[in-house]
Image 1 (tube, rainbow, N blue to C red):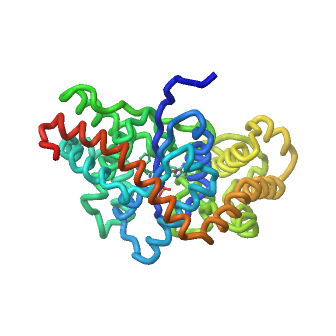
Image 2 (image 1 turned 90 degrees about the vertical axis):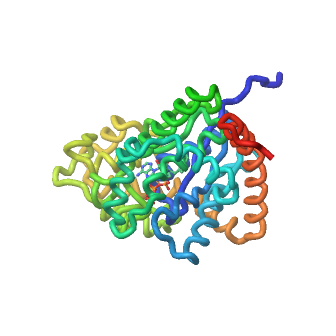
Length: 335
Ligand code: ATP
Ligand code: LTN
């Protein structure tokens, strides 16, 4: 029997600010693939967000194409989901402007990502960096997303999107679906391999702190071996006292499906050397098919361009409906 029940909608994006890391994969991308069958999904490369920090033009162009190819490489299917590049769909910037005028300066000032990034990019604290969450709200609300699969670091931005949507609905009637975060239980916050107090980030200057999704097996094993642990030499989960080992346990658990208890049992009496080798090998196997797919997609740039265009056309058609509805409510004269 045909399933006539309407599927719920999800939307998520990733910035093309460097090769995505194992943190991006376990916290977000892996989930995107898993949700594709049960939801109407839209996934985008958030290249408008990316220029809130300076990008070198040639490198930026390459990163946008690579990020798109990587989305296909994790197995997202353009037949099932809409996969597109944000800047190809003009409604995002248009709705973002409108929502800027429905967002208070005070509420934006509390955003921790803004505070962190203005510290790390002190020479370029631009207005885009400040209103970044408003553009993110526009991304989400345009597609009437019910859920937004992201890592834990994006929770605050999701709350702002919900606040903006509720406020707008309160003034004009039901225009936007109120989105909910969809944060995985395991993998929501993968930490830096060199400083487990910080999240693993692709823009970290210390390349030993992250595993890139396209790192070669030798590189992954090397980075794993140099991961910071502690002097106790026992594989035990304790995020406060043993943040380095606990982070490796989380990674291992996401890649193998084993829970912490089982991992502790399997490595009882063994040293960190054995454990790091096992984690490294599990990561290598998890990422191997993705890297192979990526190499294949990157060989056919014409096909990538064609897929981008198709994705953008569908995204434009869907999001235009929400933009029109929003503008009509405000009193704009539609052409
Ligand atoms: P940057 O490091 O350039 O600030 P980022 O990696 O934090 O970028 P995005 O590329 O926009 O940011 O993140 C894409 C997705 O990956 C988001 O859903 C985010 O929550 C998730 N994510 C990012 N870092 C981690 C992490 N260390 N652990 C789990 N999920 C993460
Ligand atoms: N800010 C997000 C990236 C992003 C996003 C979105 C995520 C931009 N627009 C819409 C979910 C929904 C981040 O992960 N750093």
